[in-house]
Image 1 (cartoon, chains in turn red, yellow):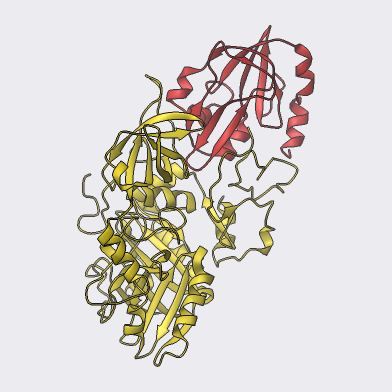
Image 2 (cartoon, rainbow over the protein chains, first blue to last red):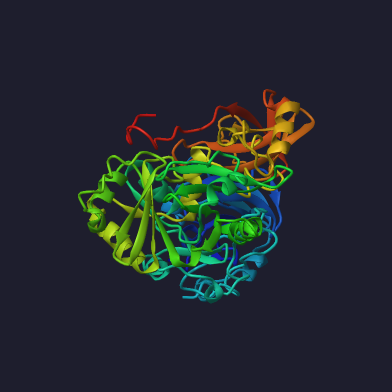
Length: 125
Length: 423
């Protein structure tokens, strides 16, 4: 499901903005295409990140995928629960499977992201 | 997140939609799998089951020149189906080479590390074939089908190489005829604790003279199937009780569909190449291109049990014996990756990850993954023999993780005896 309450990236991540904090996760499309996630590496709270940085990895039995940060800022919270239960990303990529939160530095960066319709087109809907 | 060059979508054209196959994927596996952006799906060879796979939600990948199913319901579900119930594999891409004649037995024995001369009819032997310097050309099964007919079953990725090798070695040898039957042979594996139950349900095997229950591990029989000769063996690559059915192409789809429908109450599942790899990995079976290659000798890869040196000669024998006398320089070991941070799950070490004893580089991971059955990151690694008992670490994306050596196999195989033996 590609909903209007968030923005999307060509790397199949979603960004939901709540005030000055952006919550980041991977899309349902990503979770389905990846298959069973068995290991996740996330940034540490307190890390400064720049849009486009590789901040972690999502691993399946067979593959290692880079996790990018789509916006610049400081990582303020990390979803520890998915580290111990990576399958949460497959079960609930949009809710319980959120990955990390970033203190948004520059709202203009959000303009570079895809809206729901744009992402839907991108994945061929 | 970008896509590693593993999966292609059956429904969508890939190029332009996702960054498949781009260089930034951290995987550098030499596996013969590749993204569809490098191969036109339609240029690849198919099996009689390709249409069935695609119609049943298989994710297809290019593998050794074939379009093959890498997964259906998911790797973990398929893996579990084989460990707990029964799974079906389309492995038609593998090579089947027939050798016929009165001269085959001694000739073939001169090419294989394991003894096959005078093998009883109906027996199957696991062996390697080597170069003169002992480097492994392939690992394979050798079947004695009749007094003068043998079948060599080799890896799909090495098919052309092995056919060429055998043809060259057979030149001028009396009583040896080679026929590459790969394109005419479909291969279906039925693997899991309930495999025997399912096999009993096949109408084509209902003939009372067929003693399926009496078929010992690593033996085979031939049978007149609906479209031609069947070869059925109690062999497999999963570590579970299982069978491999070599059948004419025309029989493949009907038999597959029959196995699927008659196995429904058993929870039979189609299983792709991804789970095939995790299954063999847990029981520490070698995969060519990982634990075996032309740069690895059989004793290093831990398949010395398939090497017979006494009173026989074969290509590579002298090199192997010299290595044995000098001391085998490298050993295949099992590793469990330990957490780098307290309270955090341990990371996964993949093929080619570097292993150190202190500051000293001692080898690399040959295969590594999150073990589905054991729920831990495990790895097979080729390390210098003197390091095998040291404290080791593995480098994963620039960070060092401690590892613990663990005896092999990680999970005992249940190919003989009770298919539901506790472990």
